[in-house]
Length: 229
Image (cartoon, one colour):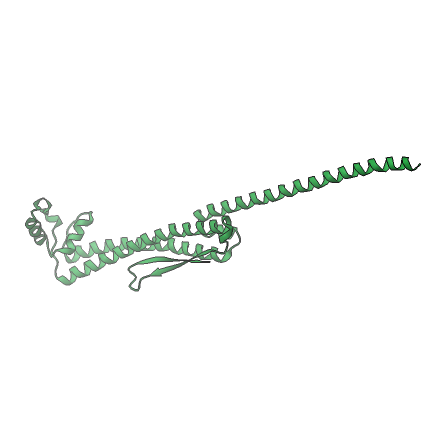
């Protein structure tokens, strides 16, 4: 009677052991798949965030739930866009005003479209003075003989005012170029910041900060970039 009981219990133990082994193996396999899927999702999220940052700086940070840097980057980009538009339009307006000013106080009838001509108008009192300087430099081919292009300033005061208007025009044109550069740089900084925080585990605390910089006389502007660890 005891022999029969032992023979029945032994197969049951073997069967239960095999069943437990299969169950453990299934759990381990499922765990690996879950971690792999999470890693793929994180990679896709970081790639999407970096692509969004190249389109609009701060959009990628907003996608990752980083509200503070997102607001700073988006605000700087908006200011750069409006700054570029305003400075470019104001530069063109001053340039047009300078030509009208020269037409009134230097008695220019027609003028030319090229900037070299309008620069010469600000450098010489009249057309005869310019032609004399050209002949002294043995560049007679550059003489101006068309009477419609002649000019003669009423006084040095008006000539100096004309040059100031043109100088301010060039300053605003430079500022517009700096704003465009700030837009490009803003996208680059946003891209690098997201890449550093999502791709490299050792520098997850690294962050970049942007701060506009303008000279005291408003003749130049730029961006200060600081890196915090």
